[in-house]
Image (cartoon, rainbow, N blue to C red):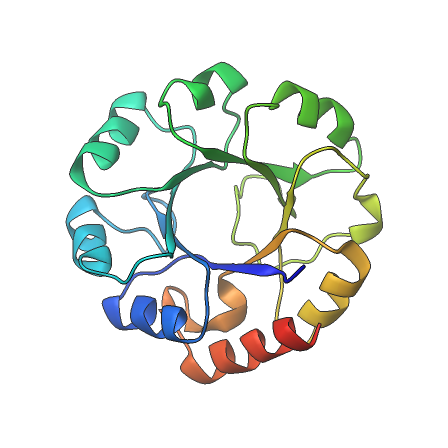
Length: 204
């Protein structure tokens, strides 16, 4: 089974179009104002308007007011929600939309319990832990911490062209999530890095 790819932190229409052209399965839009990759609803609408079919649009939130999430859902076509904070299962389920729950991989994480707690999630997204930073750290966590769970795994955290093939070989995730690893600067994607990254995924 091929490994699917989500390119997150899209802030420009041209980056969205190029990511799709290179074979990305999903695009991530960050609705978390403190992030350097954050977009407004108006910016997001311009980015995704008229994109071709069969590419999932993922909206990322961090402990957002539910009204903010509802506003995004009303304003544009969002396929999947991604919750990157301390949201409870009940919070995640209230929007009646497929969702991913991000898990920051600390030493004391029990993935089996979390997979049961978030049984309604479409997948668990495993990211690096750094105190005070909900994601996008650019840091790789110890992949040997990942337990076998009855839930698709999306691997994130510091993935680059140099390590993604090894990550796929070792973890065998359903999908991988990359942001900083294909950027020239925060929020601005690098076409050559996207090309090389996607090639490594295919080879991996």
